[in-house]
Image (cartoon, rainbow over all chains, first blue to last red; front, side, top):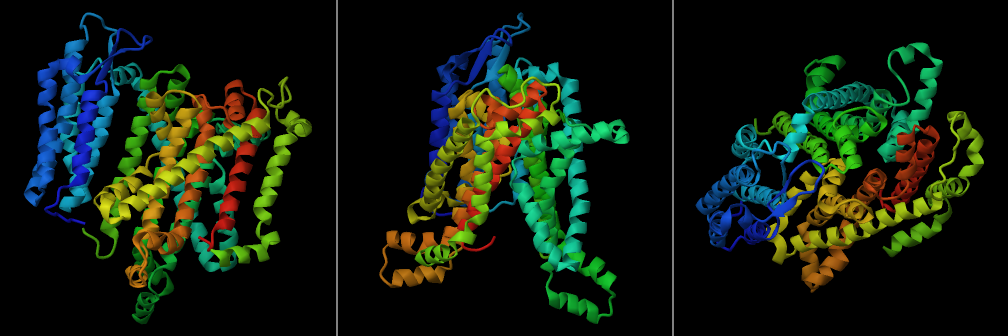
Amino acid sequence: MARVTGRPNIVLLSLMLAALLAWWGLPSVSVAPNRIVSGSAYLAPEVAGVGLAALACLPMVAVMGLAWRPSRTRLAMALALVVLMLTALPLWLSLAALRLIDPTSPGARMGIGPGPWVLLFVLLLALIELRTRLGLSRRLGWGLLAVPLGSLGVCLMRWLSPLALWQEYQGRREAFESALGEHLLLVGVAVGVSLVIGVLVALAMRRWPAAQRAGFGVLNFLQTIPSIALFGLLLAPLAWLSSEVAWLAALGVSGIGWAPALLALVGYSLLPMVRNTYVALEGVDPTVIDAARGMGMSHGQVFRQVRLPLALPVILEGIRITTVQAIGLTAVAALIGAGGLGTFIFQGLGQAAMDLVLLGALPILFMALGVDAVLGALGERLRPGGTP
Amino acid sequence: MSEARSWGRQRALCHWATPFAWLVLLLALTLGMEALEGGFRLLEPDSREIIYTRADFLVLLGRHLLMVGTAGILAIGLGVGAAIAVTRPGGRDFLPLVSQLASMGQTFPPVAVLALAVPVLGFGTVPVIVALLLYGLLPIVRNTLVGIEGIDAGVREAARGMGMTGGQILRQVELPLAAPVILAGIRTSVTINIATAAIGATVGASNLGDPIISGIVNGNTAYVVQGAVLIGLLALTVDSLFAKLMPTRG
């Protein structure tokens, strides 16, 4: 995939053209005197003058120039420029905050306009494109993002306090932390429980092949039912159970809350978990097993020392799919009072407070991407012959 | 294709039995929810209203189908089109980016996508359709790419050797061979969207999610169960329909 040709790189050219359009045509920030009033939008030249706005276009034009006759060195330079632009984005927002927000009015807040969001998206696409063309590892790609993230951190600490998203966070610091904890706990417990059950079910399916068809049938059926419907359907039986069985009620089981959420999460998690574990254990080359037997290994030894290690990457893939899925489903569980970051999403939607929605949605997004990246890299490392 | 169709006709009766059974159950419950009032009374003995009456269930079902259907048809057109475009010589430069984007985008939780769409697009039915469309694109693009890229180079070579043009190869060789994988992508896309559309009820789109949300807000379990049962049945009907359309079990 690391094809570097002398032809113009059309992808980069179109991405940078889109970046230029977004920069000049879309509002950069919006400023509101308080939380209730909707803000007034400012274009990039209105924030810092035409001169500075034009200066900011230089790296975009430079990347277009480099993409016109690409070579390895030029693409590497373009990559550096893209990282530079990503790093400069929070600084730009800081500048806007310093210029547009009246420091004497404490309620004033700044929202990020569509311009920077589109720019961020386009620059990330350019980063992915350049990383692929240069054949850099995925890990290096994530590593490159450390610089812009550092810049964002510094800006948030020093200048970006009027940012509406940041203010929503500051106002709910404790609620946010406990919601994050609940979210992680629900996901962790659901994935842990379904891993244990999933491995047991997969082992049972290997022993009794008749159970396999029925088992996958049930799990496929469960996976088809929309999450919101499953949460809803669990309300009634669990409410009934907790009213009939005293010790369940004492445990905190009720129609709403963590109990139906956890049950539904485990139900959804089982299919990918069982499928991957089953396929992984079945997929081990039989000649390897024969060789291990031939060496005098017992059944248990073959399983523990040969089959399981060889199956591990595929099982890990199952854990990855399950975890990413559970992170998203837990957000929906907020609807039935299970807590978690989804609470902010639905509160924000109810109050039409978009920054509150973002406060819930962005961490969920980052969590999903982070888990995907970390577990994906781990699976790659465990794969026989994979890059260590 | 014709072979699959005649095979389908031969076993039509038992072949379509499962989706048909789900469909009958779905329609029966949609039209006759009032008949079950006694049952729901057990769930909510204290509530005055037992059956959700703010809108007809048939209307809600229709709106739900309309939203998912519109988004689905647009997503199929755009997704398959985009995947075809980037596998042609002219658009090949975009292939690595598009395929990475499609696989990475599927990591995004649908709720987060819906939530992020609202600040940009606003409340209501159209923004939800746009969000469903964007999210539904990813599995379709990805599977179409996998399907077309997975075709043995020799097959394409043979078709070219027979004097087929690029368009003929696409229509008569590539798309038919990739069809099962593409269909699997459409199935994933539509199944996810049926669920996500229901959550769209929280952002002002009226559909089968309405009774659920309204039930949760008002603490009326009967409403929640009514909405949940209908959405579940809709998902099962559509999914079993797709399962029967698949040439092979997958």
